[in-house]
Length: 123
Image (cartoon, rainbow, N blue to C red; front, side, top):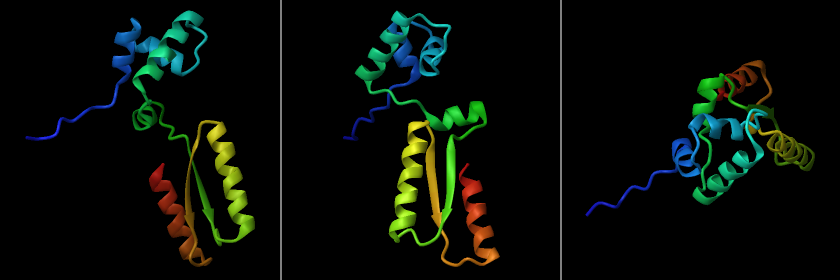
């Protein structure tokens, strides 16, 4: 017998249970002013109840923005760069961004170009 696959809740599931359209759920998630506070509260209650998490890949396709910041660094094991990276990650997270990091094994222009190409491919 095969295990039952449980799918993650979708924006349409949230909408159905909250009794609103999926566009209204989107407005709530985007903190639009064109939605009543009571409706927004109900949507967020359902989001919490279901454990809904917005699909960032889908959002990136629609908006053409990945909300990802690439960080190119060397010597991450050292205290200074490591604490700087932690601060960058915290600030980015607070602003709704993700961080992708890559370290340089060497500092020649070819290595830098290679790592920059890698970061660009992640966007």
